[in-house]
Image 1 (cartoon, rainbow, N blue to C red):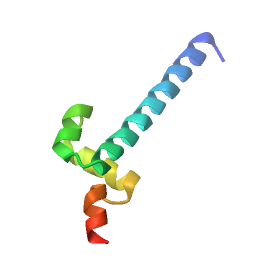
Image 2: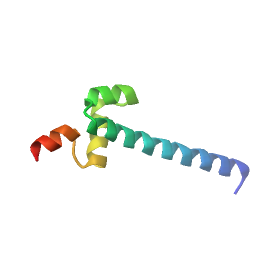
Image 3: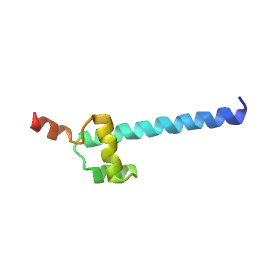
Length: 71
């Protein structure tokens, strides 16, 4: 593997990790009760993308309070 290959691979891996961390934070912010529009604005993603991320990670689009109220 060349130096460029190693460098680019390391950076691509770092970007992937950062994206995963961002998605986790988006899902956590939704659980804490923030709207998809708020979360999307803060994370610089479309609110529908924020909703998709929350569903994928949390298994649901509802906030923690909404889940507890439904129980």
